[in-house]
Image 1: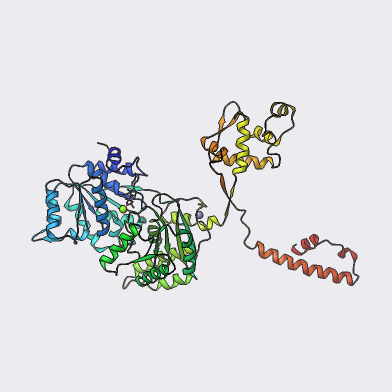
Image 2 (image 1 turned 135 degrees about the vertical axis):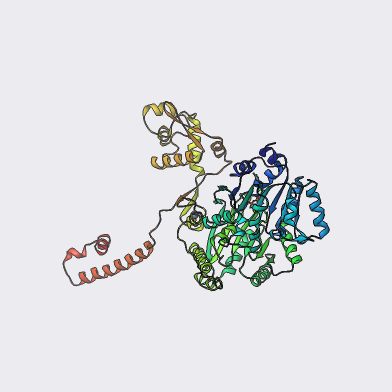
Length: 558
Ligand code: ADP
Ligand code: MG
Ligand code: ZN
C-alpha cells in the first residue's frame, strides 16, 4: 500500500500538498523528521499516513484536549482506529483504551504530555506503553517544548524521555512556528537523531494583511464587519475581560458574537466553541486561548484588537484565516501607544535574557505595524524566507496599485486576432488594428470588421496590453519561423464575455511631498504675480513685466 492510495481511499483527498509526500516517505524509512509547515498546511497527515502504514501503534503527543478529541473524531469518521488518553476520562475508559492498544486494535493513540508520567498503581503510562510495539512517535505543536518558542509548556519537557524509552521508534516533530533558534532547541530537547528538516513556504497568498490605527477601533471594526455579516471570523483581544465586553458590544450592534477565554467555565467555553464551529454564531471574540489546532477552513477574517506579543503569534493567529485557500483578511489595530503599554507586561521576573527576547519580539511586532513597505515581505523575511518587494495583497501594496477592467480592450485584441485566424504576431496584429494603410494590408483585410478597430490607441499601449494578455495566459506566443499569437481557452472565455480581465499595476509612486510642493508653488506664483504688478506699477524695466507665469515659476524654483 502506498501513501497516495491511503490519502485517496482513507482521507478522500486527490493529491498531496506541499512537502507532505516527501515527509511521509522520509518517515516511512524510520528516520527522525522535523517539519515546519504553516498552520493549515496539513501537518497531521504527515504522521497519520505513516501510522497507518506501520505495523504497530503510533503515539501522537498533542497539547490540547479539545484538539485531540477533534482529531480523533475526524480519524474515526474516516474509519481509522484512533483514540486518546487524557485527564477527562474515567479510569475505566482509560483502561479500555489501553486494552485495545494491547490487542493491537489501535493505530493511533493521542496523548497529552502530562499523561506520560501519570501512573496507575505502580506503573507509569510510559512504562505501560513500552510493553507495546510502538512504531512512530509524533510530537505535534513541537514548539511548546522550547522556551524560545511562543507558547512554552513546561509539561512538554517530559518528552525528552521519549527517545530513551523508545530508541527504535522514529520521531517526527511538527510545528507551524519556530525561528531558527527554536528549531535548534526543539531538535536538541527531543534528541532527534540527525533529522531531516522539511520547511514549507510560509506564504499565505490568499490572506490580505491590513493595519489600521487603533484610535476609534470599535467604529472601524463595525465598518469592517458590515460587509462581512455572513462570514465566520475570529477577533482576538488581549484580556479576558475585553473579549466579554467586545462580544457584548458587537452583539448589541447586531453582530452576534460569543467570547472565549481560559477563565471561562469549561462547559461554557466548549459550548461557545461548538456554536462557532457549527456556525450558529459568526464571530468568536477570544483571547489567544482560542484557536490552536482548530480545524475550521472557512474563517474569512482574523482581527487583532491589540498588538500580539510577537510575529510568531500574529502569524499563527492570522493563519487561521483562509485555510480553504479563498480570499481572507487579517486586520490589526495598532498604535505606538499600545506598543509602549505592552512593553511593561513583558518583563519576566528574574530573567533578564528572556525579558530581552520578549521585548525584541514585541518591538518587531511594532515595526510590522509601522511599515511603509510590503507587510508580507516583512513577515516572510522574518521567517527567513525570500519574498518579492511587493505582494499586491497587503494594505501597503494595495495603496500603491490601481486595478482596472481591461476587458473591452482585451476583447478588441482577441476579436482581431480571431478574425486574422491567429496567423500573425503582435507587430502585424497592431498594424492591422491600427488600420495600417499599406496596400497589401488593405487589400487583404479591408473587409474584416476589426480592421482598424484600434486606431484610437497608441501602438505602445497595444503592445503593453498584448504583453499583459500573454503573461496572464489569455494568449500564448508560438515561436515558429515567424511568431504567432494563439488564443487560449481562457482567452476564448474573455472573447465570449464569460471572464473579465482585471489588471493591477503599480501606480507611479507620487513623491510624498508632491502635493505640498504644488501648494508651495502656487503660493510662490501668487507672490511673483504681485511682484510683477508692483514692478509694472513702478514702471520698472518692461522686460520683467512680460514674463509669463511659467517662466516666473521656473525662475522661482530655480
Ligand atoms: P496543520 O496541522 O498543518 O495546521 P491540518 O493537518 O490540520 O493542518 O490540515 C488542515 C486542513 O487541510 C485539514 O482540513 C486537512 O484535512 C486538510 N488537508 C491536509 N492535507 C490535504 C491534502 N493533501 N489535500 C486536501 N486537504 C488536505
Ligand atoms: Mg495541526
Ligand atoms: Zn504587500
